[in-house]
Length: 167
Image 1 (tube, rainbow, N blue to C red):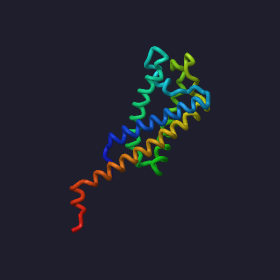
Image 2 (cartoon, one colour):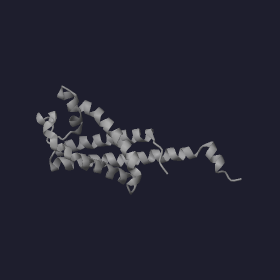
Image 3 (tube, rainbow, N blue to C red):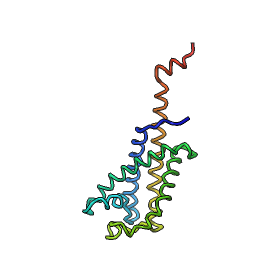
Image 4 (tube, helix red, strand yellow):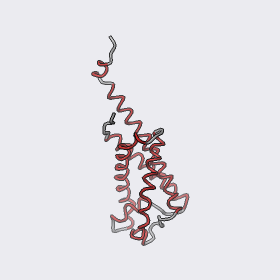
């Protein structure tokens, strides 16, 4: 049985997961001292003033979070395990697939002028993993909660109750 497209579950789970990612990002920047700030990386190509890069990056990150949640909704049934694990696997597979793009970091204005540290290093890669764990766990849990809640609500309609009543 195909799951119906659920834009509310995608939007809420994507934005909640994106927020979790940003919270872990802020913590790991403080804890590690390595300035591999994804918000600056995402926003800097869109602004002339480097001081505005993080704010622009928040908008790009939100769109990315929503898009990834949409992809997750399409594939989550194919990933084995509990919801939190499905989300973690999904987010880290995405990270492993896209991380090689950091090889082209020399083209990025924030890397070229030293606004952020280099990304194409093992320490930077490992710093990205907890961010993706947080994103994935929240995505999986929230998405499952919302889709299950909506599915049970759709079964609790007068027509369904009438069809399943015992006389």
